Length: 299
Length: 238
Image 1 (cartoon, rainbow over the protein chains, first blue to last red):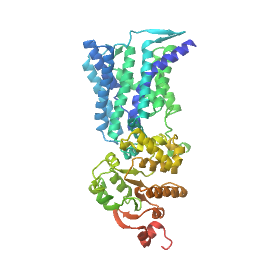
Image 2 (image 1 turned 90 degrees about the horizontal axis):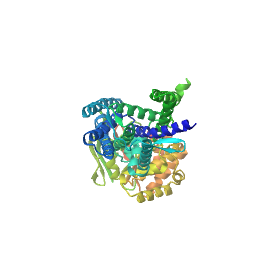
Image 3 (image 1 turned 120 degrees about the vertical axis):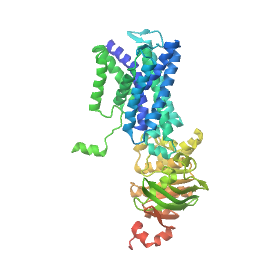
């Protein structure tokens, strides 16, 4: 029982960064109904910039954190301008394919930046842990949870208390009606990408500071985890992204403990498979069945 | 007040508007009648800056609006209440109203005062202010769409078929609202297929067919025109 609780808490802590990745995907999906496949790679390149400073100049970990987030935002803007702004509005597939291509480009850039592929990433604290009753918590993971909670809180305030948040939500609901209200779509989309990158940069830093190492494959990994968490919760739903991220973290933590490390990723895919079969819209996704689909089911 | 001269708008090679001229006078309800596909919505979209005119001019109080984009048009005083209402379904009523004021860059206090003003005008919306807009009835959604349009404090309100898809009793209610708004001095350009209802509220009519204005006149003149009688008012004499 203690193991179970311990795993669940560990899962929630690590899942909080999956939640941030999923939030990133879901913000842009909500506004554009498109997936930015280069998201993970943007975070990876941002983190590589931080690592580069760390490797060459031994800068403080906070400088690495700021560089990671700032560069992720810059790369995010680059991806938006190139794959989403430049591609015609109705060509959703073209945007996704070009974001995949940019993913490859970003990976190449990272490899050229730091050619030895695997590098140490500075931890936020010296790896430590503390006890609370029968439970043991890792300091970095607690910091990750707190960081994610602060991000989610800030995002919630931004979306529900500001004029910009209102514009973002209105555009997600109905881009045409939002345009009638005088809301600039291109500006809103660019801001959505900045938000996505902020969430991704923070998540990336928190995860890498826990793992204390980085490889170019981090991009692939982050894209997978973020997409799975978003689809578990329901695409386009912010509470869904949080729930999906935490659920993914908890299931992985249990799989890791009871079945072994090789089952960690497998459990994630099984979970996604089970969700897509039983609730295709995800936990909190909209019911996506139209009248025609309902009629078709009865035929 | 709003004056449109020789407006031509096309979708690709197809000219939807082939030179439309009309005037909407201050404090009046001007009604644009016409069959499906005649160019009524296209006219409103061109005025609102959602479509760009190929030639011609849209002038509001002497200011040329022809080349402005939607956001600039709204902030200069032309608000659109779209066909099929298009409220934001998963936002609550109050956020829908606030979204309507987006173009104004007004202070929070000013917007709160205007929201309160809308609630006074539409008490049904106040009862449902925390409800998601998608859960409102069709008539309530139309009220919300109108109130959202008014939140932009427009000098002229464009309304695209506010009666569409509503039960006759609710349609009567919506037209009462239009009459009431007009009595308070709101200038309205109304697009309608329900000519019978429009006859009671509008001061001036334009008939648009195949992208051209084919008739214009007062309600009295339109009632005397036999062709329009037969085609749009379903007259018994025909």
